[in-house]
Amino acid sequence: MAGSDKVVINLATGGEDAEKVTVAFLVATAGLEAGKQVVMFVTKEAVRLGLAGHAESIHSADAPPVSRLFQQFADGGGELYVCPICFNVRQLDEQALVDNARLAGATPLWQFIGEGATVFSY
Image (cartoon, rainbow, N blue to C red; front, side, top):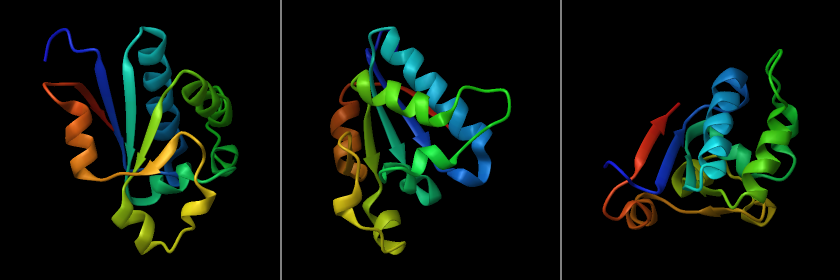
C-alpha cells in the first residue's frame, strides 16, 4: 500500500545465514530512521534472535555487527514478533525473550498490518 507508515520484515533465517540476518536488520533500522513503525516477524531458526544474547553470535564479514543493529532496532522502537509455533517446537524459554520481543503469530501480525504495510522477506 503506497504511503503506509508500517513495515513488516519477515525473517526465517537465523545464524545459519548471517548475511540475510544482517540485511534484514539494516532494512529494519533504516525504516525506523525514516519514521516507520517496524515489526520483524521471525520464524523457523530466526526465532532464536528473540533470545537474550543470541544476536551477538551472528557476524557477517565486512558488515556492521548484528548485535549493534539489533540494539539500534530495539532502541528505535522496533518490535520482534516471534512465531509461537516455531519457538515452542524448539522448546525455548519464553522468559529469556528480550524486552522488544513477544510470542505473536498470524493474528497479531494481521492486526499490526491493518490497512496495509510494506513487506520485506528474508
